[in-house]
Structures are given as C-alpha cells and as structure tokens.
Amino acid sequence: MARDTTASPSGTTFTTLTVTASASSLSPASTALPSTCVPGTFTCNSPSTFSQCVGGGTYTYMGSVAAGMQCVNGQIIRQSAGPCTPNGQIFCNGSNAFYMCDQGGLIDMGRVAPGT
Image (cartoon, rainbow, N blue to C red; front, side):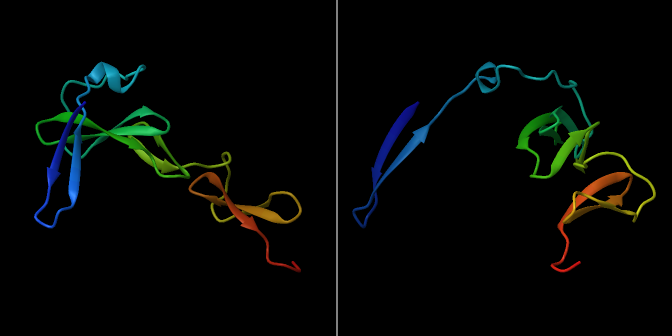
C-alpha cells in the first residue's frame, strides 16, 4: 500500500491510498473462468457472486448479486422458496402470510392485510 498526501490551494489536506493486489490475493477460492467470452454475458462464480464479460472478451468480477437474487447458469434470477404451479396461484405461509407462484417459483409476498 502506498500513501500520498497532497495539500489543496484552500489548505485542505487529502491522502490517497494505493492498494496493489494480485489475483491470488483477491479470493482464496477463485473460480476458473473461460478464457474468452461474449461481451455483456455473465458467469456465476457462486450462487451469490458473478462476473461479466467486458470488451476484449475477458470476465471481470462484479461482486455480489442483489438481495433476493441468485446467480444460476449465467443468469441472475430471483430466489424462490421452492417450485410451484400454476403461475398466479396463492399459497398460505403460516396463518398471517402468503406466497404467490410466479414463473414456477414461490415468492414470499409477506403478511396479509389486517383482518383478513
């Protein structure tokens, strides 16, 4: 790590830190990625992390998927509480909450309205 301190014309002091890391130091359990790819496509490093193909045909680690999502087969999809049919069907989740079947997966819709 390198540290550079600079004073601005107004007298404010800024410190810039430069960190250098090798690929092996970024992740102890790195995932082998294809050597070439189609720009704009995704690959899953794990169910909760992904990489995106950028110009030049190489994957760049993008980090974690958003809350409630998961990475499966190169696609970032919504997590579900299990499979279901038919789409649009409502299922009870205890006595005060419910799921809705959407695209073959149970989606937690939360609590029911008071009095229902």
